[in-house]
Image 1 (cartoon, rainbow, N blue to C red):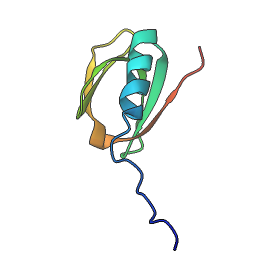
Image 2: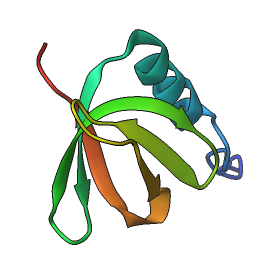
Image 3: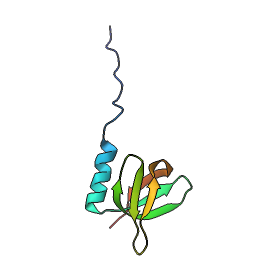
Length: 76
């Protein structure tokens, strides 16, 4: 008999760890929204549903995570 397969854990906290790293290091990021718009700035704070992005020379933006398609680190 073979062992039953185990499912991957639902909550790994990998996203939380990565976002904490981006916020602490003030790494410039770009965020692509589902509307295809790209926003650039630095991650200030985040929680389970929101991100706050500071943009140079502009106000901070609050974004719902559900509106984010993906994000990446910009070259420094």
